[in-house]
Length: 193
Image 1 (tube, rainbow, N blue to C red):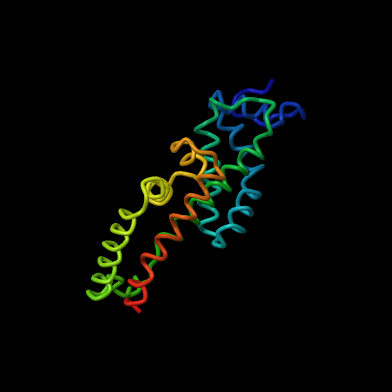
Image 2: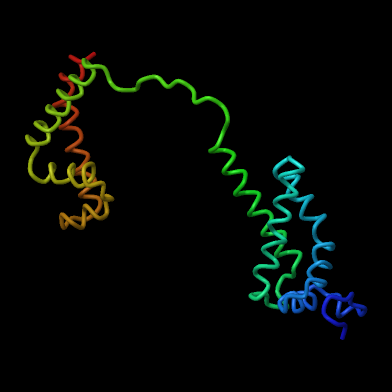
């Protein structure tokens, strides 16, 4: 076997797994061989993803740095060093692209004030009051169906079980409750238009 830091001669000794075993022992010569072997494909992947040669170089270097840093956790026989490095550089690129999306040099566009105007707020408050009154006027079981479905946001199945009903009976009850509310609130909606 070759000494630490010297070039390897046999095919078996040149395998990524054999080189990683040496890198795990902090053999910089073996690490240099792996860097030479994988830097170009990593740079190509990064360049194609981020579209900037300098950034791609940084990303490829970061992936290779992680190879050195995480060498102690390397397990031979898995997908291989190349596949692992490719996955690392792709993830680094995706992180960089996400950050780009949220960090921009462009000025923040003016945003229209979306606060409702006073008349709209007053109409909405009147509609809420009328809705609460209309729900209060419903028969108890219809009121329960509306409250469970629309205010508590439970599924019809859960609401039916809560009210000790089968699903079809509950859905029929809910339909009647919605119809009653529509009839009760129609004059209010027409007045608002």
